[in-house]
Amino acid sequence: MALPRLNENPEYELEIPSTKQKVRFRPFLVKEEKVLMIAMESDNQKDILNTVVNTITTCINESIEKRSLTTFDVEYLFLKIRAKSVGETSTIGIKCESCETSNDVKINIDEVKMDVPDIDGLIKLNDQVSVEMRWPSYQAIINDDIMEKESSVDQVFSLIRSSISSIMTNDERFAASDHTAEELDAFIESMDTKQFTQIREYVEKMPKLSHPINFTCSHCAAKNSIQLEGMQNFFS
Image (cartoon, rainbow, N blue to C red; front, side, top):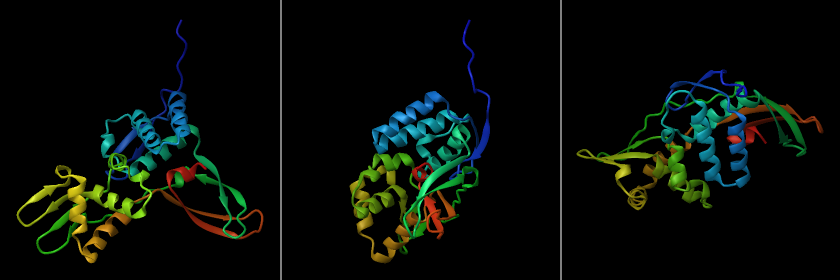
């Protein structure tokens, strides 16, 4: 006689931030948590991110194009799926800004929201040339090794390059995917300061997982108000 199988029925709904697509999902199981734990132990950012994305797509019932998920999609989806899997509250240690004593602060994951600004992705650089921008996908981040770059300047340039969807003149449209990284870098480097600032400001407005935290230090009674950012900081 076959052994019973557990936990195949719970189902929840959430919305993919970048596309507003509503999807149904289940909590991840021990077999998926085991793979996640192995990836986390590797300390390899590519392996961790790929494993997180694979876990997300395994738990979501609808068909989604995982390569098109943005980095903030991945962070938000994983946070929400993990909450239904291991608990909707997370207790993390946060240092007091006054005395640096670590305080255990409880966060309700259900209260964490992802606001995606409605920004026009078409940027006019001059009378002849415009650039069509997009939020970079997690796959583009991995392919360009952005997380591995030590220089902040290199990271900014890589993010900008990954955010360019197409370059348009009055007569032609050039898809960024048809051109090499070197060609795109040469295009970016040909901009003047004002043009580059327009492009950089678009990238800097990319949504990110964040949540306000207010607590009173257990040691010095100082009131702290911080913004928690980044998926890993919700579980530290």
